[in-house]
Length: 264
Image 1 (cartoon, rainbow, N blue to C red):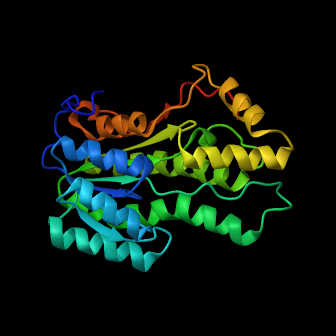
Image 2: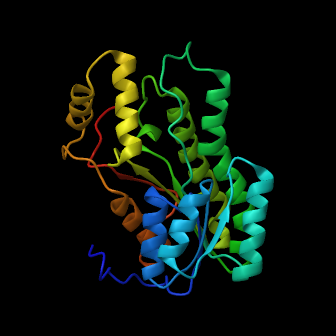
């Protein structure tokens, strides 16, 4: 998809879309693409500097500092959306963290809780506020970001994998619950997304298992059928498709954007 001339997807122009963790990575790429499609965008993030840079790039968007694991913070974000945009048509539940890397007996309970709170509970807290607004709009869509770790067990990354499996369960449950309200709910399962966060994941696992960074990177790519990582833009394109009228009869699905990750 050309960044200058993106494929025009039906039904996105004028839609009010909230993107969590929208100031960098997959979230920013999604907000950028949806903005080019004519959508009205609201983003939140925990990083004020990233928010400022995203606001400067994206222009006329609502941007709020919010931690999705904090109920009060989430409430403030959605209250701002109601005031500024007058409602909501769709939510991209993108916020997440890598969580700790280590053996189960080495992972601190506080690190486990933080990973699950951001990656899974945060999606519940945002959906809880977004769904009544989307119902009031006559229907719409939710896209929840899971991971290849939401379909494969992930040694030394157990809290992250557990949370991402949970996202798939949440997605399937909400698709059944909200379908009669004309709300579609799908999950995207990115694979290894090129960038600093993936580089750190590889380095942490290399250190945990006692191998070099280069060997661990080769091991990761060797488990991908296409032998390459995906990009933020690959994931954003799938999110835009699912939110558009082109995806109007897709719900309850978990779509892998991963080059076919065979194992973790």
